[in-house]
Structure formats: C-alpha cells, structure tokens
Amino acid sequence: MFGADKGTANLLDGKKLSIGIVQARFNEGITDALFKACHAELLALGVLAKNITHVLVPGALEVPVALQALAERDDFDALIALGCIIRGETYHFELVANESGAAVTRLALDYHLPIANAILTTENVAQAVARQEDKGRDAARVAVEMARVLENIG
Image (cartoon, rainbow, N blue to C red; front, side, top):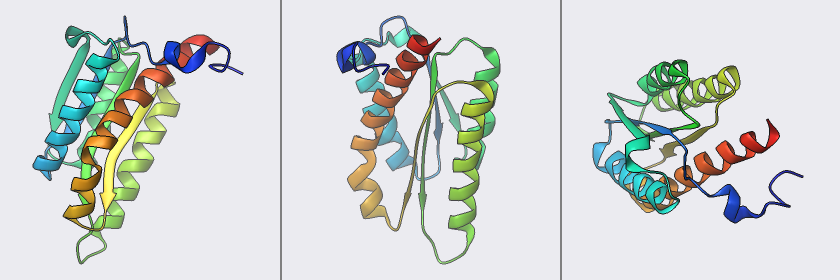
C-alpha cells in the first residue's frame, strides 16, 4: 500500500511542491478565511510561498475554468478549489453545488492532477463560518498528500 510504509509525515512534506489555489470571491468573508487557513497550512507543510499561485474568480461556477487553465500550464503538483455556496430559497444552490463539484472532479481525472475541493456547501452562514478554517487547512493537507501519493505511484 502506498503511504503506509512511507508514513504520513513523508506524505505531508510540501517541500519542492508547486500548488495552485483558485478562490471564488462570492461569500468573500468565508472564502478569504478558507484561503488564509489553506495558505498558512501549505507554508507549515513546507511549501514555499513562491511556489503557491493564487487566483481569484467571481464564484464557484468559475472555479473550474481557472483550475483548467492552471492544469494546462502543467507546472503544478496539485490544485486547490476554494469557495462557498450557501443554500438559498431556490434551486440555484443545487445547480451551483452539483456543477462546480462535478467539474472539479472531472478536471482532476482528465488532467491526472490532484485537486482538493474545498468549495463549501452549507445550509447557512453559521455552518460555513464553523467550517472555514478546518476545511482550508484540510484542503492544503489533501493537496500535499495526494501530490506525494501520485508521485509514489508514478
């Protein structure tokens, strides 16, 4: 099994990795907190600040387009999607959540590139706020670990 014999510590070594982050501005207070936690965790894992690319887009539906542009550059070990979709009174929540999530997954598979999906989908602002820091940190850890896992497989 990959990772079990190398230990989690090796899989969370971000040294020499290049990471791209795409952040949706919609619900900006929450996505800013996601980014701050994610960026801090990447640095704590050893990713150099100069190896982190940060792109802002209007909303969650635009995140996959920017992720695709970064993936096509072929100089990232992993990407991270940050956003926040809060349920409203219409079907729009389901549309945005489903389409953005499916597109992020499709890009990861099409480009054989790890993409940590931290586009929050919550019922209300309180749920989003409660998750913003943990999910930001989690996204950084997933990106680094998956980059290392794929490196070990390849």
